[in-house]
Length: 190
Image (cartoon, one colour):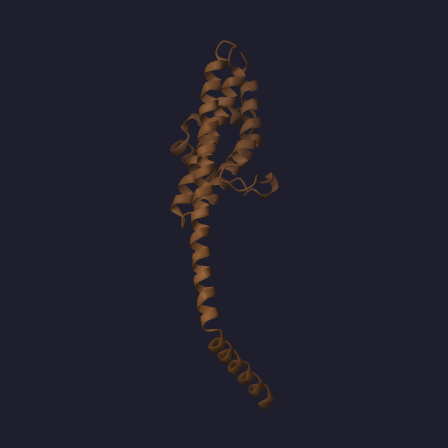
């Protein structure tokens, strides 16, 4: 069994990697994270309490053991909330990315528990980890399906525009010619 400080270090090491990947985009270097403020801390803790309350005890231990690591974790969680807020215009994508982040965070907790488990308890932890791994793959599939659907819709609109332009190419060329000729006339009057 590991000591509480070993638990905190194990959680911090794993969670930095997983929280950084939280909302789908690439990991965020620590120097590009938002500054730590009490308001951002409150927002991050509220977000964690709402979505993954099982992480809060680990963060509380981390806060006592290493303030710098704690603040980095809070900054990372706050960053994730900002990334998710940017997805509000695409509710399906927002929902999927939030589910991915929650599953990754649960995986962080499970990995930490596995590191503390006795050899006899590890098979159960591994079973839970296998389930989270499968959930993450299923969510990745859903994200790609969503992206494919958006791209198909966009491709349909582009093809429609292309057809319209091809059908009216002569008329459009004549309108552009007229506009260019008018521009040339205005320049000669200057």
